[in-house]
Amino acid sequence: FMSTMETMQVQLPQGAFSGQQLQVSTPRGLMTVTVPMGVVAGQFFTISLPAQPAPSQCALAQPAPKGVSVSQPLLSVEECSGSDTDFPREPCPPIVMGTVVEDAMPKVAPASSLADQLSYSNVVAEPHPEDVGGEVAISAARADGAGAGHPTAWYSDDQLEALKCSPMPADTFTAGVGSASRPPVGEVICQGLPVTSAAVVMGTPIVTTQGGFPVVSSAQAASSAATKYDGWEGIKSCDGRLQVDLDELMLFFNTHNTRPLLGVEVHGWHRERRSRTVTRRDKDGRTHHETEHYWVTVTDFEYKVDLTRFIFPFGYIASVDENQLTVLQLLRKFVDDDNMLKSLSMIKEVQFDYSAMRAMVHGYIRSLGWRRGLTVSFPKANYSVRVYHENWLSQMWENQCVNILCHLTVLPCLAMRLYRGDCSCWCGGGHKEEDLRSFFRIQYAPVQVFEAIRPMLWCPGFSGAQFAMEMLRDVFW
Image (cartoon, rainbow, N blue to C red; front, side, top):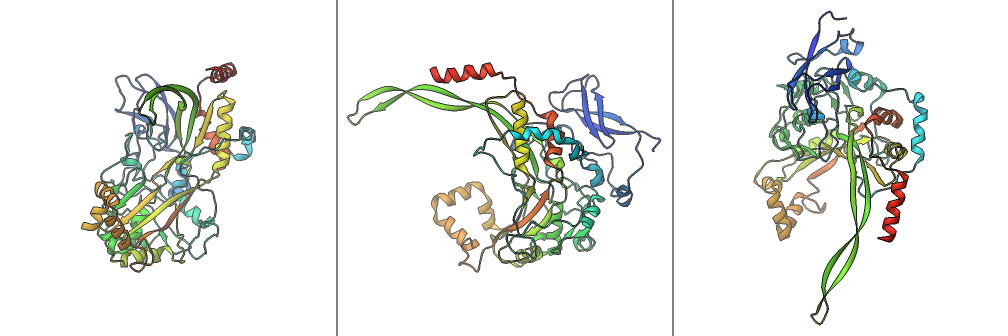
């Protein structure tokens, strides 16, 4: 045990106030702290951490990177607070640079002790057409060296143990998002340690995948290629080094292979029948007024709960190319391509039993007394990493106004798409490569994740009598 006390800076989230008690997740575990007097939302205050216990074997095997303060959190409390964004923004624990993966992952109760919670899944969730991304079950997707339709490849047990003893990758995407409700814009600030030689870094990986792709932690070595946000989708770069150097390209995808932002969204709603007066004109030019009835969907409550922290932080980069090209072959194809509109995209997918999770959340909200419409979905963000070639033609194509104008006038759009090879019979095949995948997994049982987030689930009070009154209102109104 350490005999000295350490401190940590905490940013007060919106809605909190002086004198209020908050629960803060620290490297020592959950702590209840009282907000000092005079501190307002957005300001920082210092808390003292208890004595540090003896480090685990993983911590001894992977010390914190030199030159990085181990007391500096990657995310503040406010940056994890809720907001009206397109992805979940709920309070999540700050991650300290250099923290070992095994120590950073949430500690949950064993699944065998949570059998009672499975009763919530007896209520079948209604399907909803607006449920959005993130719902990728453990299903068919080609890994390097295997044909399409084979199970998704994953790390071996020995590789998982090595990754668990590695430092947590720096979350380059979330650090620049903050609590803004608009999509992130501008340059991405790299939080890892920049390197001078990508070849040296990629030559000493933590593990190497079955397809030969080396995996390194961005906390120890990060790409210094200039990178921009690509909205909520992820990030993009047209740095010149990525166009000609295979090692730089591999390091870039390693650096930005961070966990997608994933959450569970609970939406309570009801339908209302309304009337309006409309003016119609018949074929003889005469006008008359009619009363028109229509239905609208009214939101009663809507919130998101963060699930990102349950995702294992190292995604397995693989190829799903129908021509059996491996990851390294796809990267080499991009480097050797001289097309001005070439691009290479990596899509992140999170594998989890979403059906079971949805059923438990849905059943629990119903058990709280909610009888109106209910939709449970899984929004996500930061699911794309894209590299493209910077030149006058690609700048025109990337410009939103020019892109819309090209599509409106049809011919320029058709010419550019043919030049890019969107039709494989032209220009020697496609130059827009989208067959790179990064498979992430939530390695907890759905019941474990549900029990961990259950205190954050809620709904307004709504009695059976109120539900009956609403049905009578719809009948007689």
